[in-house]
Image 1 (cartoon, rainbow, N blue to C red):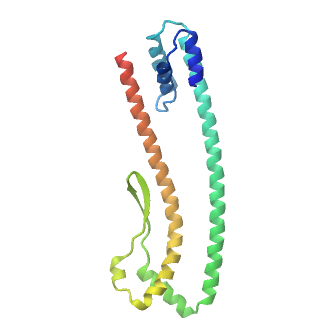
Image 2 (image 1 turned 30 degrees about the vertical axis):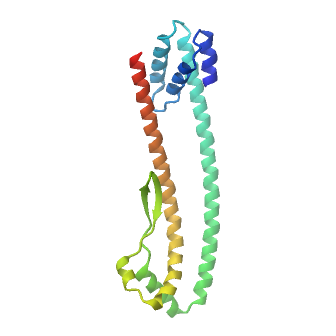
Image 3 (image 1 turned 180 degrees about the vertical axis):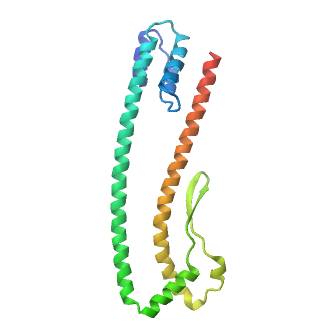
Length: 209
């Protein structure tokens, strides 16, 4: 886009990299409509040149930018689909392994041992993982029921560790999915704030001209 504007504007006597970059800023501002971009860029360029070709140059630049955006979104969507398929396949394989291990473990335990493990898990189970924001990033945090943990016996401790590991693996899967979604929301919010800041800066610059 910068190359197109550099060539076209130079042809009408506007050979200034700062002006080109200023126009590109408007073109790539996703918070502005096509009409707003057209009016803002044309108004800006008309202040620095009297060429009648300004409107046509800007119109074509907007079309090119929109085409590039569509292609970028399509490529990104395809990439996300492929990543999702890979993630789903990986989760299926992990689930198969977990089920297989669980069946083997289940068969090796007596009824009394299974009841004991279930009782331990109910008494001392890890709480559900939480997503917290720290230094602008999402983190997965696990907490224990401190009240229950206070009364855990030393005889239960070794077996409890094994039981907790099983619970933690299952909780971790759900927590990871939550973290991925949370990170995406944070990134989206950051981009929107940057775009809004850039748009306000450009409007102030335009008013000063």
